Length: 404
Image (cartoon, rainbow, N blue to C red):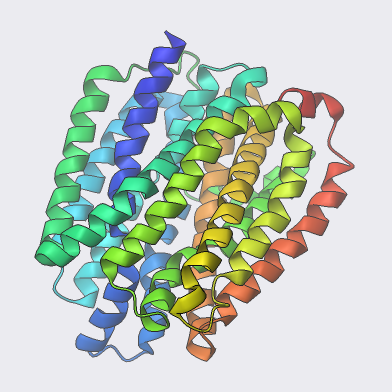
């Protein structure tokens, strides 16, 4: 029964994230182009950060509330409702004719995509601490597979029929996802909480986590890690188009390569890593791998060495992301009270969304100064949290590590 629910949840998350992956190779350059054609008063490079930050601001505000609400009313209604909202957001995206409508579409989709905390809590509901690290990898694997198929599909659809094809296809995909989840995804929360979460609790929760041993430091590491990675994720498309002359389809194929590597690592190797290394070593090894991978992305001076360089970067990022995502999520879950899994993981997700606000805005400013600067800066950040992780590893209890 548990395996069946895991399989259904994986498929549901995959379809949800496939829609997200479809817009990845299109959105940054589209935002910059629409900022120019809409005669916006700011630097067009800033439009890339603004469009990404708007999506993440909404996730930041609603992810913890959705997580807490799933503790009260169940995971299933949160997941189903958010899928429908996503369908609306992608439909608006497909008909966007200017920067303002594009911005509105991403705000709606940000609201609909604030459901990952409920999905994480669902996994926590049906797994034991000893098995959680491996099962938490389902979300990373779904992200990976979403990037395998989503970006190449998005690039192809955009070249074939423009923005309308992309938006309508993705909206229909979300509707199919809704039907699938409605029919086959049962409720997992059998111990519902009566706590009602207020909007202000989002901010209170971020300060309260510092009162829980280990959790506060893990939240800070996660914030900087997601911020650094989002600097690449948002500005990579623009760099590859403007510096190396790639079109949307070629950009989509690169993200697809990232997805393939990520799916292999998270779907097949995380269980091995968690048994052989333990969560502490996974955390320590992941930081420098991601740091090097981010920093080398803009190094080739021309297209001749581009693909060799990107292949090395993709391998480093995929392994590093797999190690970091699973170790952080698992350690937070293991050290959280059993009755507040949704709330704690929702707060973590919300903080991740806040980092995706800061990262793209910072990257767009840095990119306006130099195309290489966002990626090098992101690498420096990752080495900064590597030393923080070393310090944290001395405080981690050995029984937490053995739960991997």
